[in-house]
Image (cartoon, rainbow, N blue to C red; front, top):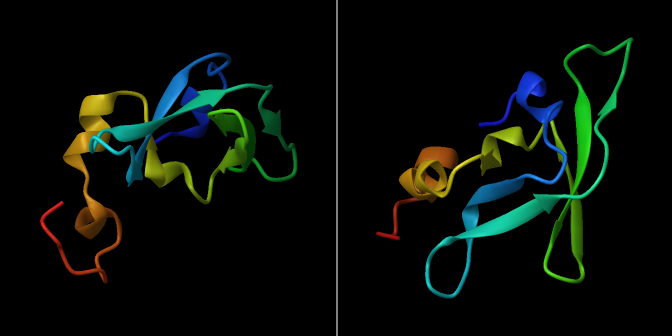
Length: 92
């Protein structure tokens, strides 16, 4: 899981998604491609632009930060059942 303090130093880093996988089963790699946005009135909120491939763009925020990790090993350790407990484990 990514914290706000970690997000401040992200420029150019690679993040690994816990549930989205490549064809070979490894976690998808998302690259930070912009500056972090912080708010004075909302101290726990942050937004970081990220990209995957040529056309997939999104934002890493305080809402979806639990889906991303800094290392591939950490992301591999989490499967769908640990991230989403209401989804039954399919042995992935």
